[in-house]
Image 1 (cartoon, rainbow, N blue to C red):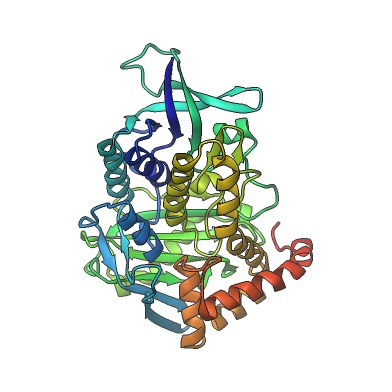
Image 2: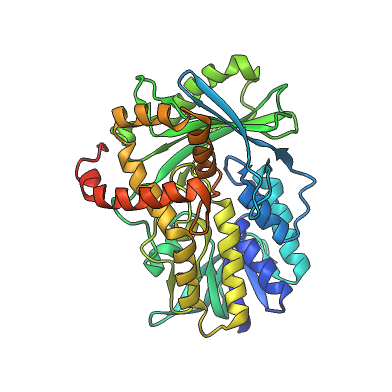
Length: 416
């Protein structure tokens, strides 16, 4: 039986980041990715300054990405275009990098670092009691191995980077917390003469086909390659969420932005995906979850690539430092860095699930430049336990205030 230091289930940004970091420090690493090399992943393709900072730390060449200066926020009749702030923590620019190219750059860097990459391979954790001791692997095609054949690989640490909860999460008890917020989104691509625009655009005042305010937003993310990523996303806390037709909502949004962006027909069939925003647990004996698998998605923008990169690097670094304490230290450090902000976001999502609160809140979010800058920091994932200044203070107060209101918010939740 093959034995490695770290087995990673999932070859997206989070899994690749963990593999790069661990392999560069001398660990034996193997990554299992269900898709083929260069596979696409449905996504908005936007990278926050925080994500760009993480990619720089991983020494990823971003020449292929389209540089983004800031964010254009539209709420009703108000539009504010703001540049990303200059801080000592993150770069002052983001990017748009289609996932088929971003993910390929990351997984290729993992291979160059010495990690073994197995594409078209489905891995499931192997349990010895309640401890994960490695993975069992089956090919997703039968070209190399006969159908039904499986291989077991032992690992000191198994990192779960398998995205939204599925079979792996069910085996480990790491499924979504019932009743907590989650999101749905849909996107396509279209040609536009504004593909070189240097700002992401987010329409916060999104409505469904009946004119009902939707907690979510529509986006135009210019890719710099002749196209724009066009999409909409919604949170599960709105009334009638289960009846929401994402394709219809995307069509409605397209009609709104079409004149300004001069967009052509969809270049591919719109594709939808689910955004996990909670998990029953993110660690257990012999394993840790990172990125989306750990519920590390900002409920206020649906973004999680930056958290995936950071959590992947953190898991690898802690393992290299001390394999015996990686589980407990990872859980504690992820909690310290992200939990308060993400908890506040989930509570906030219940608040804006009420249409009249949502409409008034949207107007307030861009009402002045000072308030809009705080909204910008939240939308850019620039807020966490170390954030100084007004944005940090506002989120601290929001965490306390929404914590007190949380029981009432959940009791009177608008979802149905």
